[in-house]
Length: 336
Image 1 (cartoon, rainbow, N blue to C red):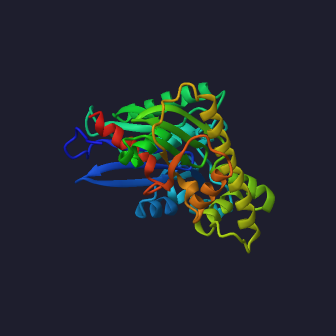
Image 2: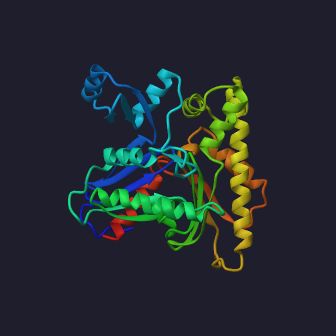
Image 3: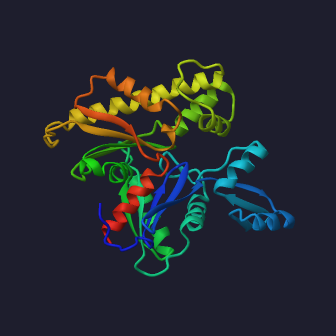
């Protein structure tokens, strides 16, 4: 995908995920990424704490008797204080149960993107495909994110998460295939033909579902489960720890739900699907696909499912955590 921007350094691709926010830029023909956890914690105000946080460049704001730490460091403070971090988003959308969701999200985005350098600087930001019956949530979510970016001076445009994955990963098939992003709040899916999205959908069984379900069974905090999942879990066929055994059960549940819904969508839309003259690839991305052996487990369950179309391969994104942001950036560059 060729860019109309000579060096691409001004455009930004922004993956606004439930668990993480990732900003992608192009500088000297190299993709560069910054990421922050989409979370925050409140800690009691003390002058020395504020001074140290400034010295260590920890993103924070002071609000009365509280210091609000947001982004990556919020995880460490939550673990230290044995509390759950608060989340501006839930299941892919702004969290209706969190009164400070919009202001916290805006702070994290500004930490990553800063303010626009001119009135023509573009940001393409990811939005989920709406789960069935949640279209109104998507309208509010997309409009609100666009306003946050406009307030920072950017020209902002939304791109669905699954399509962004296809832009990032399937140039070798002329952007034809299935892109899947398994994130924290949702698993997003898109089928595209020659870069044109044929259908997109999402399901709410994703990383947070795995964490919350596993926590309910083990008695651990969901944040502790997430850390264990990211640091030590892998699909190796046997699990010495109960936490890993439970994670495997809910991972399988997520994968089966995702494949079942994809099959249903393909069958339901079979009459309007373009005639695919050859098998197409399926690419996996997002933070929830990172455990070792995920691709193999996904492919194994897929083979059991009598999948209705032929695939050339099931492959992992080059960098699963950055794929959506990269695809959003590529869309911003091509529009330049």
